Amino acid sequence: MTLEGKKKYTAALIAIIGTIVIQFAPEQEDVVMQVVTTLAPLLVGGIYILTQGQHDKKKEEVKIEHEKSFQAEKAVILPVSIEQPDPAVMIDEWDLPEFTELDRRASMKAETDYFEANPMTNFFAAPSVMRNIKCVSIEQALAAWGWYEDKAEAAFAAKFGFPFGEAEEHLADDKTCPYYSVDNMARQKSIHHWSMLRKVRDVKKSMGDLEDLDELQIDWSSGLAPKDRNLFTVGNYAKYLIENFYRKEKV
Image (cartoon, one colour):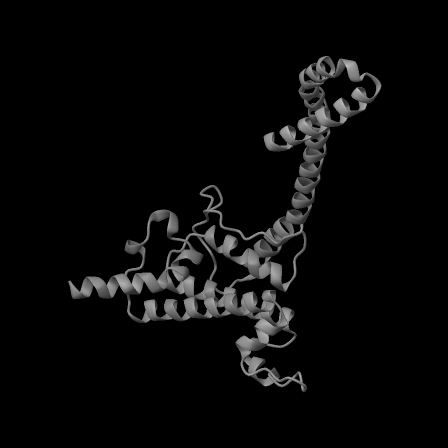
């Protein structure tokens, strides 16, 4: 109740009580009105305190329920891993032809973060695995990103129901209203399909940048801080390493 509201109800209460009492004691009109005028604000104030207290209590209960609901919704949203590499688990050696260890780590990370391991959660967990493996050569990074690209395509196929490379062949799946592009198809399906398409393209773009980095024989390690010399960041920053290389060439 606002201050204006309290004034309004006080005036109304004075008028009502004054009118009722005067009907029974007209000779005491002045005394009655003086008493009513004095006591009415106190009465309204008391009513305000009681009603506002109940209102505040109800408001707090609603707030608590809302927070509980929000936390419950957060619990089922797939988190996005952005953690920094953990030096304690950073390893120096990795057998290039052997991807079993990467698969094992990705599955474990997926089960920890997303409560189950499947093509999509394994794909989302893969960057964390790659960040925790030190990159010692560009060949190692290329092999790891080739593995990551395979994870991306597996996630795409699980989400869309067909391989990434065959996406354009499915534009006419809806005979009533065919899609006019792969982007249009993804957006029409859902925001999650659109997000998956963009993620897979980003992975392929970074893989291409990494291949260019290798072809140009750029000293990638000198362009990265020690904490960033891991399998994921080398590929993720390949574009900027190339840009910095050409920028220095012009100087």
